[in-house]
Image (cartoon, rainbow, N blue to C red):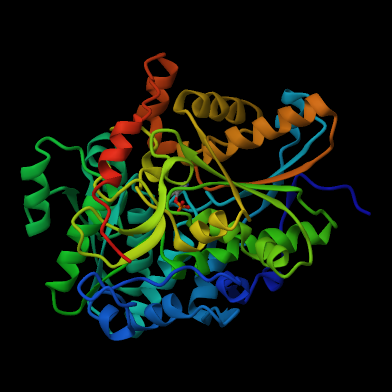
Length: 455
Ligand SMILES: *Cc1c(COP(=O)(O)O)cnc(C)c1O
């Protein structure tokens, strides 16, 4: 067998041509989205005013295992994919671990993250439907940037509601999006009914993804020729992101490498759901076994401290109800730097897998995440996004356990993006001014008490 290279690339001809729908192999399907007005499962007709038609079909389909990736999207993917699987030889050496660590690097495009994989798909289906434009929210800014790029490519208008704390901390993110032609509004704003209501209830709030979603949905449904698109959480997004896992598996298979542990950070669950998809499929079909670990911030711990229940996907309670691990849609994470992971809920697919004991979850504190990020930057060279660094932390912790036991486990983790726009957070860490904010049991109980009643 060949020596394993530092970077395993696929040829263009080896790129996946279909997305994989993990739900097709799940015995216990994720619970359906509910219409908050009737408490009945959402139908295509219910969803049509908000979402693009083809994306609704993908959202509601839990039986078709593979979807062809349209040629236009494949061509766009070729600009920045396939992305490499990298062997972290230098990190292994620094840790003195017998573990073999690999990471799938998704930061090699201007948006700086995996989000472009779904953004281009969603923009494609919006264009195909003949829409004028789309609205969305963005937390840390990666999704908004990815969608701006995708909309520019297909000539669509793009309205982005950006969580206020990020809008203020990351002015250059905003400029990148404007360069691609998007318009950016800090959220909560006074441009929507729901934004005005949230501002009244929580004066001075620095916003949350949940608030920004409510504003973006209102903006879409009240504008002719617009639909709302979402960069995470939804099953259609996990479907598009399966390209990450399919590529990673094809690359590892080339060298007969089978990971023992697969790790990803979890905000709404899209990169993790995409990375684990083909591996989890094998586990569900009883062909192979793997350990899967979701890593979330201790400041916003939906899997590890939330409740598995129906909840609203947004703070303004205008979106459908999803059954998921949630901290409650009124949960306001502290204004810390977990950026893209500050979401109160979790993908319903991952929630069901976690409830069924097929996946583990850990929460990690911010200062330990940045210590891992620093070590990674200094050894592997790439400046990681803070979100991705949650996965780095967990991968290092598993590798250190191997050092104690002497086991040569193979670890694969998702390096979802780069951290160039997160230098305010890095600065806090470098100055020793970063703190770990962990919500109290009372804080969580308070927002969970407001969960909608569903029987
Ligand atoms: C958005 C984002 C995440 C978290 O989102 P998921 O949907 O949970 O994948 C993680 N890493 C980066 C770099 C991101 O931009």
